[in-house]
Image (cartoon, rainbow, N blue to C red; front, side, top):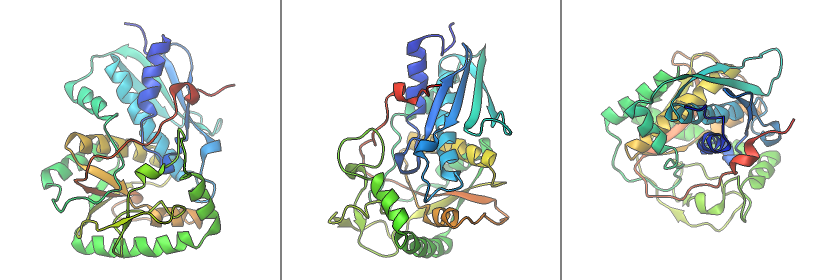
Length: 321
């Protein structure tokens, strides 16, 4: 069986899968390099880094980690076992985030095939969810998915959810008071046809109540309709033991595995990362927490079908040297 990167078709399949990953403001801040017949390298694309809201590059690394997980799945479905090295040259090329070696043959499991099939179905859903709660056994599956990638998913109870929503609202006010943030947000939510960014048709409605359980990315698009969202949203926080670049990459892989499992069970998800973005913008590091360092704040539930955000073609994901 030829290596997945031995043919142009094989490379396109890998990059198409990787490019379907979620990313901050759909910036898709990744590039890939085919390094021989058995290696793929993942690079962070600094030209797509959010310089205002992501000065540390944390969100970029989480996004690239999600793309890395999709790449791993695509390699498995192609009949190989990926061996991944994160930050393979920590003192060298800083943009090189991971190296994937695929020399060993190995048939994928049914579970891996099932996850792979969810890559094209996964969506970020900013619409109101139903009042139906995600069952405990499904949340348990999501927690197991995060744990397999070295992260921890911490579901919040009603009281903690209410407190966090208040905190999210305060952080949102801080972000919207920053002109640089607003300009950056507008640049990635512009109207028209693009292969990246958040188009208007995926923004969802504004919340008619405060605090809002959904992040309104449409500050640059006034006049959008409002809607009532679920009165008791289900929130969870994805944490990692540390808060370094390698932890961010692991968080991204955990996030994507978890989101694919959620998709398999018909569960929708969106993100409320305003407190994390404001922390990063102010160049603050996350202090130690007993449950780990927060990397993502996630809203789970059952939402309507939504369209897919645009993606760049595989040919654009290959860097030139």
